[in-house]
Length: 470
Image (cartoon, rainbow, N blue to C red; front, side, top):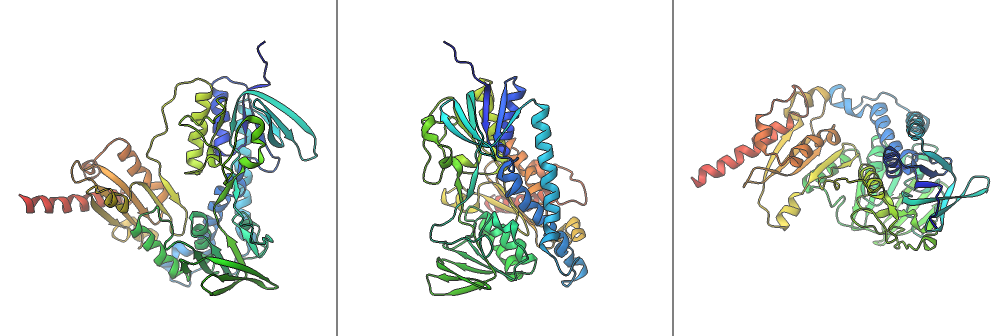
């Protein structure tokens, strides 16, 4: 007997991956539903992660006048006494608008929204418990798990969500702390460290490794460190927090080396834990690893063929941008619709102050693999647009193959880095060469001109070598 399901595709989670999976399946004519908790529409991305943190960054830049100080002096500030209310007003506005957009998209595509917390009852059934404790079930032929992550919390640390917090708790602070210790120099830790340093907090970053953001270009990271130190950030590399002491007026971090660091607030940024361990996966015939992540194949299928998983819950790269594409691809595969695989060239954007973005390989990677390359560099201070916007520190670096002049990597530091990286991504994706960038006319004055300047720099270096060998 053929089993009749409530839905063709059931998506657990409404974050970037879940949204795109649901909409793609609906566009393909399937009956689709999304399960999400009442106050988490849009997932972590909209409510506590990407959108609020990037909006907070924008508010910090605007209210501190940081980007204008090159023009109007180091004492320039739009508002002297910046409060948490000043910062969160913009954040709440953007979150509200984004949630409205998501609800509208789901409704427009006739996607049912099932409100509550979903867990597996069997391989085709999800149990849904709403805020009042009322229980219901929904069945589907295909299921897409897009449950996301939560901040990892070391068991040895007593979090109180006021003095000792995780990265989600930073958005609920009652006041801008005078001092802040950030444990962990990963992407989230460094982004928040740079924001609060810009606000005037005395920030100390503690990292057990000997450098931060080790997957980034070393020259770019050195430039970022210089600017963060200029904002009075102190770095403690190769250091581990042994214990944290609660005190009436703050927290005291005790390092294994014996150092003690006092701060109003201590933020742990110890990575993120997948939510898979809370889904009762055993009932579906699935398991999660010790970080709460689900293993998938190249089509985002789990070990149970009709169940897919996308987004942060499957691990690296755990970006909103890649999660969206994973959701779309998983939905197409689930609906037996042909689709091309995800392109290998994926840009990384880090919203520090100043921001970083790159695509392709780093100098260290190329050197380690004995791949010859030439560099071409453009500095914002040499561009008219750089002078106009007051960015004298930004730079763009091209890594070029001397054999066929194709781009091996593009690395940008400074204003608009996450936007202009896409020019390099497009050229690399189309197997373009620096000849294209040299011959192209860019709008003037723009930051995009940096591509032409950097391409000419690389071209001249290679020409010098050719002349010597002639």
